[in-house]
Length: 206
Image (cartoon, rainbow, N blue to C red; front, side, top):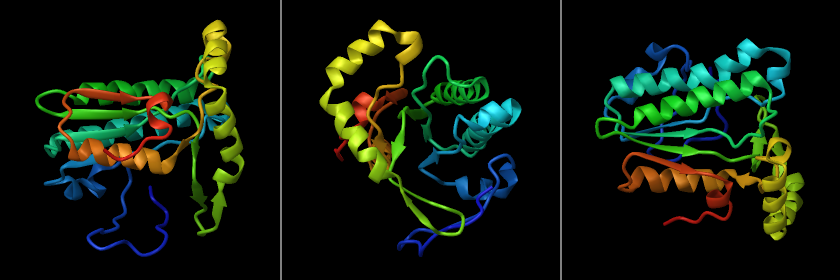
């Protein structure tokens, strides 16, 4: 469930509280919606401690929201998933794969889905108490380096896919995820659209 919202919502935006695992707490807000954006999960290292919780937080939270949106007749869904290495902790990996499968299944009967698959996401994160954590300060050099040496890093991933596959992509800025989501919601794409770090890094509005 959402614990807190920060700041004042912009004009035309209403904050509401709900529990992703309990559709009755938010399904009224899905009525008449053009799209639903699902960006729920927890970091992969949490899966090391509790596999079942990781499956729940990264998988079931997404699938339950998508099922509720389907019942409400929402035409488009955006699911923020992940590009993962093969050795990613089992609970996290299986949860993300479950969410992606549900997203693909959603794109039936004139419904469409955008699956966003960043590796690392950068930007400013806020704690429950409202304290900003500027992740971009640490991620900016990594992003620059990975973009500069992209051909070499891609070759390394191809040479050692079981070890490096999904590890050497530049961090994706949260604003790029937002722009891609907005373009999809306002666009005319049908079926399932998947965007990886290759398409997301440097993404600009259409």
